[in-house]
Every structure is written in structure tokens, then in C-alpha cells.
Length: 396
Ligand code: PMP
Image (tube, rainbow, N blue to C red; front, side):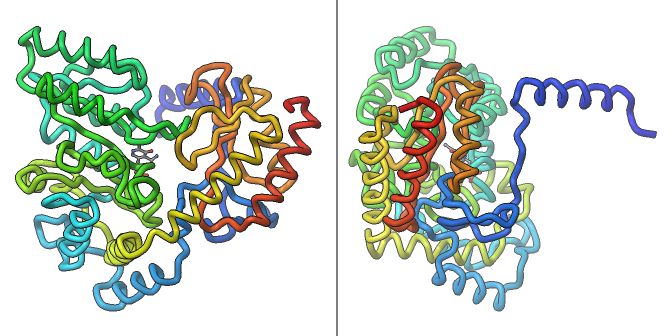
């Protein structure tokens, strides 16, 4: 017999979410996740993926994955320390270290999993973590898991960070203090102030941790936000995901060899969860080789992003202060933002509404993610549709 308490809990809470318009309806794609997708038999220009460079459908990655599957099969067979480490995993990690210009790297099954793994392998209840208030959910959960004292600082507010670092250091309460930030913030597209963060870290002896999920493949000639600021030897943990610009799945930490050695013996998802599949590893490795070989895809991404941003601005939309290809179109209220996104969809553009509680009330936005795979014709069509819907709804 199923639990009545559970059933009541689920029904009440699902109902509440639906009434508040916060129940997320998930649309299954009937196509690959490319610049144009098919949903319910309709083709839509896709501005909602993190497939920044279009690599998720790149023939070179597909070929690498197929070859690896032919050789190694579809599954790694075990956790890494038992016998799940294939030569391919080692090669991927060596390639990642070369890509990030660090001594070593360790791969995990996802970016989320990587933050859960890495933070709690190093920090404990006698430590403190200074965390930007807009850090990603996986960072927040990783911090909680560590049981360290979590001290949030105002978003990218360096005075607040400095003050809190000083207080934490002078309190003498903590063995270790870490500062954690996203490299690029995914809702607004702004870049963390890493030079100041590193300076404060040096002043107060902080461990530095940068999650560059949205910066890798996009900034610093592809190597990410840390490289963009020339700080490769000044950041202890460089976190990345293999699921966004790299186009596959997985996450990683790049850093000093001793750090990676420690994570290999102490981080729980590495020790207790089956390794990435051979196909994923081979495709990810291929993607990184492509990025190290040429900046052509990044150039295309930035050209497309600049074109879309300029077009939306000229139409009169508020696109915030993004410094990266992430292009929010700020509409305001939750209901209005949802309605705007729905109308875009009806006209042929798939761009999701992002509203409270993901972003503050009144700053609901449709978030556009242009990629290297979009053509100018697609972006022109997007701008035509934005103009039509924006005028119709009195937004521009
Ligand atoms: N960190 C940040 C900053 C992210 O934006 C994301 C993805 N939303 C993740 C980690 C999780 O990465 P993954 O999708 O590879 O689990």
C-alpha cells in the first residue's frame, strides 16, 4: 500500500505550484538539440540550449563517440577506482589539464556532481566558505554537503567580500576559508571580478574556487574566464562542465597535481558512482582538441551573439548588462514574461521564460542563448518575431 502522507504532500504541493504558474512543463524534443528543434511536430528556432559552439551535433564528435563505443562498449562497467578507469578517461584528463593550463585534472559524471564532490572533499565543519549570492544551485548544495560555515556575499560586491573575508579570518574560528564564484553568471551573463577576488584571496589566505560552466569554450580563447584574466596559476580549483560548450556530458576540476590526487582518493562521486561512458569521454576529448586547435567556433559564437544583442537593443528591448553570449531580454512581471515567451513560441522561437524565484521578482526575462550553429538568416527571423511580439504586447 502506498503512503497516504506522501500522496497528500505531493498533491498539495503540485497543486500549489500549478496555481502559482511555477510548475515547469517539460517539452520533449523530437529532434537533435540543434539551432532548430522540433516539438509537437513544429520546427522552432532554438535559443534555449547551452550548446554554445554547436558541438552537441558535430560530426567529428559523433565519429569519436561511435569509434569509442565500437572499441570499449557503451558503459565503463564500474566506478573509477575499482576498474572503471579506461585509458580514455586518463587521456581526457590529460587533455583537460592541457586545455586549462594546469598540472592535472579529474573528470566527473556531471558538472553538478563535480561541485558536490570537490567542495566537500576539501572543506569541513571547521572551515568557512564565502559564496557569491548568485552562485549556481550545485555550488550551494556542495557547500551544504561540506558542513562548512556558509557566508554569502552580495553579488560581485568586492567591498562586501573583503569585509566578510576579513571578519572570517580575524575571528580565528576557521581552519580554512574558501571563496567560491561562478566564472560567468548564467542568468545575467556577467563575468565574476576575478582579479579582485584573487587579490582578496591573497590578502586573507583564501582557497579560490571558480565554477566556469558558462565561461569555458566561450572566453579566454576557449580556455575560460580564469585564462581570460590571465590568472591560470592563481586559482586553486577551476571547475568546468563538459555539457555546455563542450557539447557532451560530464564535469571536471583542473588544478595542481596534489589537489587532483586528493580528489581521487576523497571525493565521493568519484569513489562511489560509475565512470563516464566511453562514448561521452571520447566525444568530450575530441571537442577539447577542436577548441585547442582553432578559435573559429568561438568567433562564430561571438559574432552571432553580438548580432542578436545589437538587433534586440535597436528594437528597444532591455537586454541587461551581459558581457557574454547569454542574452537576457528583461520583461518584468512573471505573468507577462511567461506570456511573451509563449507568443514567441507560437511564432517559431523557442526561448524560455525565467522568472521568480530563479531571478528576483520584477526581473522576469526571456533568456536567449545564441550559438555558433545559428545562421544569420535564423537570427534575422528571430529579430522579426521579437519585433512583432514586442509591439503586439506593448513592450517596445
Ligand atoms: N555549474 C554551473 C555554474 C552551471 O550553470 C551548471 C549547469 N546549469 C552546472 C554547474 C551543472 O553542470 P552540469 O549540467 O554539467 O551538471
